[in-house]
Image (cartoon, rainbow, N blue to C red; front, side, top):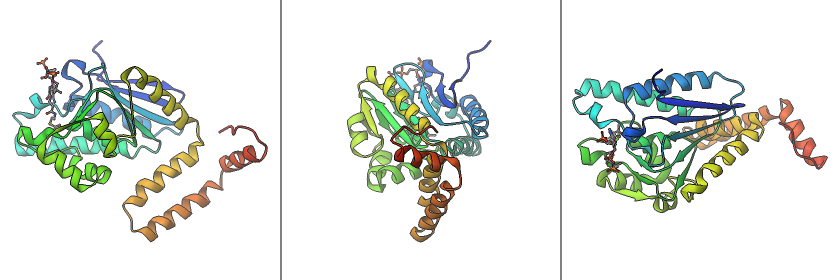
Length: 257
Ligand code: CAA
């Protein structure tokens, strides 16, 4: 049997996805993107999904970008189709209804950085390297980087990274808000697993509602976004989760979600 390009490990709705092309530093080619989209389409339909962790195989690289060898001979039309395929896949990841965590264990460049930007969290090893080096190849980011990066780190820093193509270390990535936490590589695995378990153990309805309020609200004016928050806040009172959460507090016990 051929090796799977995306490894899926499912532990009671807490799912770990591993991009598995370590010999090419997990570069994203069409085959990887197709497989990732197929896996995400299956996940988004699941009511029991709690949290998703995304990482790259091996200790050297999360994802070193879109596959340069595959892109090298593309025509503009082929490049457009490739970018659209990637954008659709990353949109699926971004809009999964549960928290997503990028576990960045090494190079996180170009399309790899764009993959991490489509996740809610990024936790990185202290030797991780980030960047949007596309200008060094004569192109621009094509998997959403020019739009998601400024939304995450602000337009000035996004312009800096996209126009210089410079690489930054994990400490700078933390300082500019590109990642949430940085850990020694030996501790990263355990930390990310624990974080994902914790996210998955909180009330699933309220975690999904939090993500929806923040994601959907960001694209709206403040008053509409606040109305969305109120609607979702009220919705939380319609199920068992709020009764259990508040009863557990009053009864001085842990909630059972
Ligand atoms: N595409 C295809 N193959 C890649 C790759 C990529 N993005 N990155 C690394 N590889 C391959 C290398 O070609 C090499 O393959 P071979 O062993 O067959 O020669 C293998 O992975 C190991 O890489 P290196 O020997 O280069 O490893 P290194 O430790 O010397 O350097 C690196 C590591 C600095 C990450 C270097 O590989 C590198 O600069 N990679 C390219 C990074 C990059 O420019 N990414 C952006 C791509 S463009 C993009 O992503 C556009 C977009 O938005 C759509």
